[in-house]
Image (tube, rainbow, N blue to C red; front, side):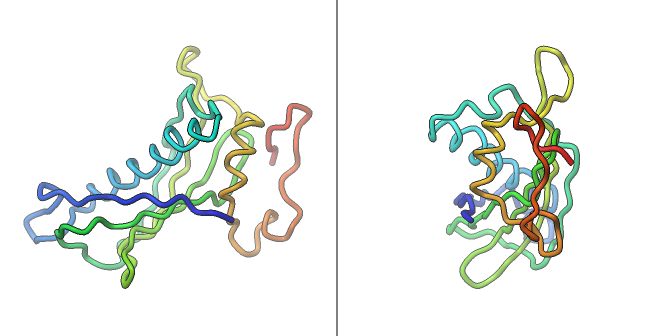
Length: 157
């Protein structure tokens, strides 16, 4: 399966008093990679996936190594861990050729902005996301069973 690759520049104001990228700034980096993945890449493939909006329901971040300012961007790899009926789990690694600085995960929920409520993953969105699906070992998806599908094609769990 493929991973989305985003080259993220470091900015001087990303640093904190200790001389490394502040922990909160990593959330911005993840957001930049996620937006690039979902709103720039998806329409570029002829899809209107997620143009209605998504909200973040959860973040998990493991800070592995300090990242200090430099002129070389870091790479953020993004992939899909799981697709459910009304949420998607994304995973990330913030790294360069030698070091992984952060491993993270985000649960996003497709959202109907006009109605002001969550909505289900569409079959088009599922199709797009499946190209980036890397389930963790031991999950139904990794075992080849996959999640069930409703009559509309949305993933059900």
